[in-house]
Length: 317
Image (cartoon, rainbow, N blue to C red):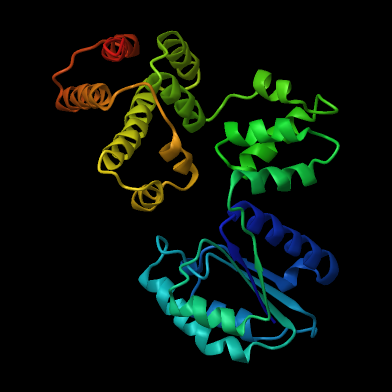
């Protein structure tokens, strides 16, 4: 029997895989269970034995193989050879041997993926296309333990990371019977990506007081240079959007050209800042980056670098 757990939510895939392992071990004992987390680390004989040999006691066997079908960014020569071997023996696997392929974001163009989908007895897809999907899943899981508003805020703080969101909810429930949104705001720090979006909004709308207050909030939990690089990267995206809009390119085309995914809402945003002023700010920040990397900038500590960065930002007002 061949099963496949796949699609884009790695956390849900791992959670379901663990449930299978626990249930199988409880029913059939764990000595009939093999979990291969990196197929490049096992040799062909080990793979062949666990795929094709039946249990000595004629019990069911479960073989879990993580990372196959491989993603586009996780391919190697060895992986390719193992995939070719697997395709050659999939039809020979005994009925009592259960093989579970567990893989997030596989390369659907690959021969292995296409052939496996044809031969699999069952394929389960774990897909979260948006933050709303994650909020819905967590709202069901934490029914009567957290309000949807609290979960929605937490997912936004954790930048759509389901695993981190769930961990934070579980920690709060140790001391709270029910989680409201105020608890999230009081006890959870936003991820840098979420914080940067808020800061960028203040910057692009020329809110000086909020901008510098938010910088202080971010730097309480974030390295100065990590913050600087994230600020530069996010401003770059807005520069591209402004540039494409000035060429009268449609919002839909901009989404596709920049592959914005979760940041697609940025295309529809309207800001007070003019393109020339944003462009000047971006160039000044790039020059600061060049000075830093070339060793032409002299500073003794983070505070000195922070002061220089703030001086550049003050030129907006």
